[in-house]
Amino acid sequence: MSQHLHHEMKMYGEIKLYAGSGSPELAQKIADYLGQQISPREVIQFPNENIFIKLKSSARGQDVYIIQATSSPVHYNLMELLIMIQTIRLDSAARITAVVPYLCYGRSDKKDQPRVPITARLVADMIEIAGADRYMTFDPHAGQIQGFFSIPGDVLTASHMVSDYIKRNLLKQMKDPVVVATDLGFAKKGRNYALDMDLPISFIEKRRTGNDAKAEALTLIGDVNDRDVIIVDDEVDTGGSIAQAVNVVRENGACDIYLAFIHPLFSRDAAERLAVLPIKQIITTDTVSIPPEKMKPLEGRITILSISSMLGEVIRRAHEGRSVGEMFNE
Image 1 (spheres, one colour):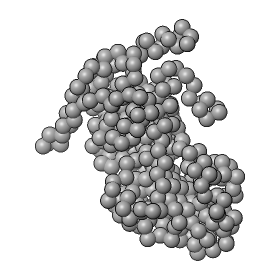
Image 2: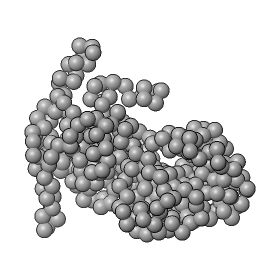
Image 3: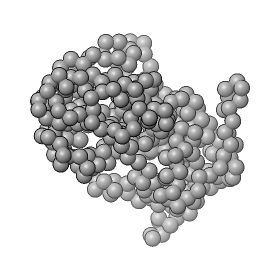
Image 4: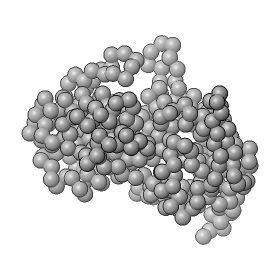
């Protein structure tokens, strides 16, 4: 080990992991990968909905990683993350990294109409002001969100993991497969999936009609007739866009349909909506924890790939001052 690397590790102390209420299972898997324990803390929500956090051991001088997705309940999980960051900052941690597998408000990334906020920028500011020195996240909805942070971070993608799973386990049984991106905004990321799997790509052109979650799918660009289809997206929220995409490719002659996406948000009745679609299999990840009641309608047709090993290795490399890009041949 070089003298500089040894100095960096001593300066930041040891790895110390904290789990937020939004990601307890993922945090435990990361801890198991690293051979670490989850550091104990007490989280209390008072009757007035205020959150109180107390650490059960000192974080002074340590290299701290707080693992917390900001999925539902969004505002509770976000505030818990911010309060935990500040609590650990006030306990004199040497460095604090906010590990946020799913970052909320990713769709509010620009002023695309008059008198609206850029809430993704606000969330980034709050994480910094709370006291985070670094951040880690997976597959943000818009790439420019990286520019909202002034602190360094690791913006990771689980798309390679999803593509590798499909190549190893599904491609050989598919009939003339084609990747389909759910909208033109996902075209670049959709092409990455297609390149990883060496497949052609088609696109669904759609147009949002208001400020709610509904959208109208209009046109399929490309050929899916008599072919198996892999529909790709970054997240599934209510399931409306995916349902429209399934209907469009089915109307255009698709055979078996597979869904692949990173963040399984599954708001409202999304799981039930997916369960009745004519799809063969769903491939997603554990950036967001799926409650058992939402898993039940999808049993037998959903595969959840864990990001824990990848994230654990990124944490290890960040702690040791080693390149993360080398993991991906970058």
